[in-house]
Length: 81
Length: 288
Ligand code: SF4
Ligand code: SF4
Ligand code: SF4
Image (tube, rainbow over all chains, first blue to last red; front, side, top):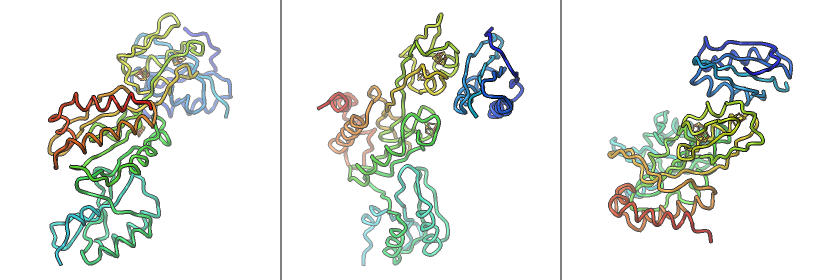
């Protein structure tokens, strides 16, 4: 498992695209620049699209871990406002 | 006075089943119309047509129910609004395009810009039969490149830069072709599987994938009475100059070999794909 100082966690495995990104975005917006968000997401569309959408919003992707059960854990550092 | 239907058709006026009525096709490049164009089109449709327009399957606009006697007036009023009549018949047709990388985050090329350049180069050019170009920005293929006589699809030729990679694993997941395999911090790209979609480049958080934009061309697509998907004869084209050399060669081949009323696909089938390939290769590799 990655070793990051996680500030906040969010599980987006209970929603489908495009709500996945919206849910993650809502959480990350509450954080301060430099904080780290841990996101639990499903394989398929979410893992293909959510990291890229977060990057496009100016956040920094740190790591994507395969949990081996059809889910992934993504670590994202909040970018500048 | 006898009506010269061929001349009218060339000028975008399509004869309707209703006597003395024409559906006027306008020239639209890459699906873009300005607000000024639209206002004028609306005005003309109300004044001379029946107050509606028809959007064609190839991003065109037609104003139906224009009366024969109004044709000149309609032409000049539309010109005031910056609208030009389109063409029908045996010539280079409307060039279609998606919004490309000027607007769309997935885009690998500026589709609209390429469409405008193709239009300037070829629009209306007389040929043995109709000839269609379509430009789509990436593998998502919103513009259905392969249904055109020549289709152009935006591509990204990618390479991995080890120094920049933080091994986050995102690219491995976004690659739908399974072309990327990670192994102990080293990433290998299977070039046979890569379809140049560029998703790795766009998703990598550290710009550890470099992409060189390119064009994948397809030839001989047709989606009317016969349905056939255009074939890729060449490796991706890597610059505009090379692109136009190849499209020039394709059009010339069609002009030289096609029988009147024969679509590009059938010319290729009849004359031989190897013959076309020869011509295309010469244009592709020629660098003088
Ligand atoms: S083909 Fe690609 S670039 Fe063009 S609109 Fe679709 S997704 Fe965007
Ligand atoms: S360009 Fe597309 S297919 Fe090729 S390696 Fe990148 S993501 Fe995979
Ligand atoms: S997305 Fe970029 S940083 Fe992450 S593993 Fe792929 S090349 Fe490395």
